[in-house]
Image 1 (cartoon, rainbow, N blue to C red):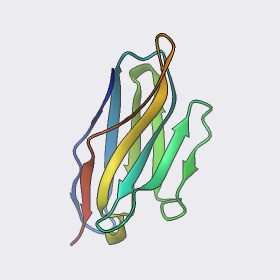
Image 2: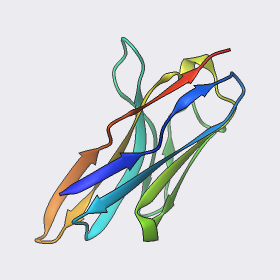
Image 3: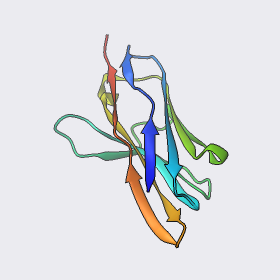
Length: 120
């Protein structure tokens, strides 16, 4: 079993910053990719940023230049630094990871979600 534990989100004023973290633990041989998705009320879940083991990042157009994804492979942890936050960034943010457990067996898991609210 592989689990993801996300840090707390919170209330941030427009223009402010917030950093999210997500740590993977359990039966992990290798992680192929970790990333962040978000879901605003009434909307579908959408990609925010992903970082595969190759190191080639992919960002949603709406966050390019404002958000930065990074990863600590030794700790199986991914971070999302969010700057210049806008009210439209308000959403529940979900961490995602997929890779291989011993066996080998493929896994894909989601974090519990953390609410980020951008409001004055």
